Image 1 (cartoon, rainbow, N blue to C red):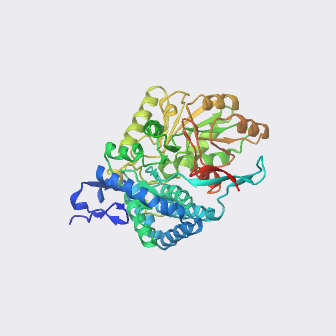
Image 2: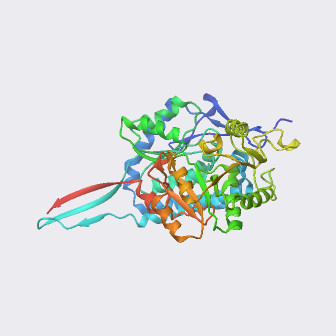
Image 3: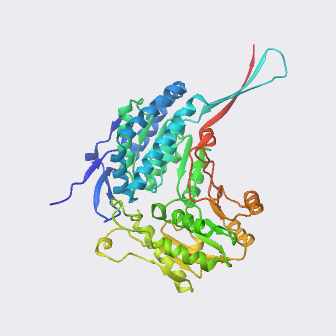
Length: 483
């Protein structure tokens, strides 16, 4: 008997698109590559309709009191809480993360949106003294307008919450464009939007595999702000697309986080953090530990302990509670990473664990890659040059912090870095000199909603989360008033 393939439409102006007149995007389960769902593929006309209806809804939405806008966000959160398990299962099916990780993503999404809703009462302007009597000088905060949110495939739901919450509470309408590999969750999310009663056009969702169709979203003069989570190359494309209209940009782009371990570090703590920070979500986190730089004095001890720790990671059915790591979402991404691993082995790196598809019948289909460790890797080798976004960890020996920092700062991107040492002077030096947006000092991967997530250099502009993330969705309007 053929497995049921469920269909999910796109959502524009409070209506669900008729799939009978449009092409379909087939969505695969990364665990077995079976198509389990289809999503309506939007046409250029659909995208233009989404832009026009978002623009039409904009004026009324920005004049809606901020707390009323916040209440709509709370209403979506309430519905997401009620369907927590349902959305977690969707995430496992279309993205491949474990069920435990998926539940965590749903919870994070609720936290992101709740934080944004709470900001409805905290949007602040300013009043300054003037030069003359009977005058006022005021700085008001106003929305940009129609915002296009381009979401990556690694967190299909959390990235929606991360972008939608700040956009809506500050008075912007939003068009969601999920990644073509993971559009199901976005369609289901819009069902909650509809149920919460948001005005038509305030939230639209379009899905497409056609680059020309997608480009209309960012090239249109209707679009006033673009929020992208994606690769550095995608960010460059956004810059070019936004140039003619001087469209506002929030870009969270690629990274290559070094995990620096010095000779005075708590080795056991560093090993645990290195494993969690590399293999979480099958290595598909932009701020993941992408390469270990360990002091040569402790490299052997650290590596031996790390191998033992990583050997405890169980790969398999992501719905199995005993499993720690599911499949990768992208077969193309894994083929690229396999080539990088093979290049390094050919250049003298030693494969001490993993290196490809795990053995066993359950791994014959799907996007599987065993937890992998490479030693005898040199700075500049293939796995150190390129963002991996996969469960592969190269280990480089360094002679102290200065060498590790020089390797890191020489890179074009600067998203995040990890540092394990008990030397408080090096802590301060790293804060002053490491050219990245986030530094984890004696800390595994984490992200708090009240923090700020941003990249330096080619890792992006603007940022998300916390008060600064809210601010990026607002423009300043200066008023000189004589009375």
